[in-house]
Length: 122
Image (cartoon, rainbow, N blue to C red; front, side, top):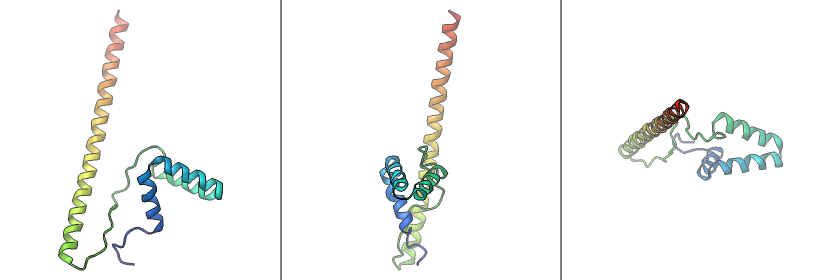
């Protein structure tokens, strides 16, 4: 199998479920328990291990995009470099959004504490 052939059937199933969200993972897990309980247990363990159970979709830094080589080595190299750059930018953007959420949460908490303190003083 060529190096850039893409994910196997399990990887494609994982990506298909990821596209449909957490509900699809839960349905797959329940169906796994109904069909054969070790399948459901394996899906539950995977969901917890990969943080899909708790809404964190961040995967490892492994490449998501698998492109079949075109035969043009210059284009393939350019495409790989561009996809890597886009993935890095996406990761940086997701980190930035997480920091924004944390800052907003802290600001809201600080505002709540100030309001609580002013109410306690009266």
